[in-house]
Amino acid sequence: MRIDSVDKMVHAIKTMQVRGAPLIGAAAAYGIALATLEDDSEAHALLVAEKLKNSRPTAVNLAWAVNRMLAVLQNTATQRNLAAWREAANIVNEDAAQNQAIGQHGLGLIKQSYQNQLIKNKPFNILTHCNAGWLATVDFGTALAPIYAAHDAGLNIHVWVDETRPRNQGAFLTAWELAQHGVPHTVITDNAGGHLMQQGAVDMVIVGADRVTATGDVCNKIGTYLKALAAFDNIVSGHRIPFYAAVPSPTIDWTMSDGLKEITIEERDSEEVTIIKGLAVDGSIQSVRVIPIESSAANPAFDVTPARLVTGIITEKGVFAPNALKAIAP
Ligand code: MRU
Image (cartoon, rainbow, N blue to C red; front, side, top):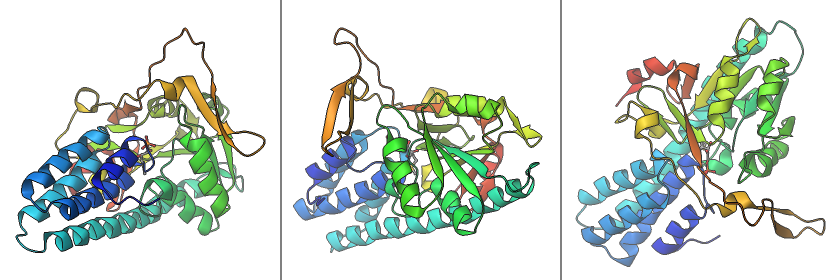
């Protein structure tokens, strides 16, 4: 898909043609670069910045990237367009490098738990929610980066993929990514995770996030909180099932300390709930309504998992307990 105007970029982010916190950050950075092609003035950059920031409210990466681009432009008097493209490329390259490092830190955690398994040589089962793979970032992914690294290191891992209603990012995107990479996985309904945890079939939960507070509250795709609650309530290999969020540092909002009170949760169109899209037997994409025409639907897109339910945050700088995250504050 070619995105060659600010309006097309705003549309692509709003309608989720590009989605995932780090990727909409990188895309929005190019939105500002495109703005300088249309009109090189400071006023236009500020106007476009507001449009981009309002396109999706929850993932902090978007506002972070836009502000970073504005800061560069404010310090650049000539060749502003060149400076903007250069800074957008920096954001892109940094995201890939951060996610690769997350993969290595997460691999360390998986290896440790894998070796501590009470039953040896059984597959190590990781549950993930939504899509936090390379389709949601510039490259590698966040939650999926450790999974790819563990698989590539020869560990016997298997992934439970939550389908992630209403947009089914797990069923459509995560399952596809894992299949491309040859990682053993099974798609489950969003409600199956708790049951599988009670059966001892989940060794670890790893999710991505759209915003993490300085105190370690994790905001991620709707349904994440319920997985964290179930993990907290169940024991595997003598411990609560560990629940990790994997995030590059631009996903951490250092200005916030109470995720439940402070994070704006995006409310999306109810049609995403009432109408489901999928492949028909002839291979065409079809839409069908799944609730009665008389019923209304609500569609909060994210939820907040309080820090007390989070075992650790996997960042490019290492793995931190939620209350130790401040150690890497800028
Ligand atoms: O609404 P989406 O598809 O943009 O939501 C994506 C998620 O919730 C991801 O888990 C999150 O952005 C982390 S992406 C690496």
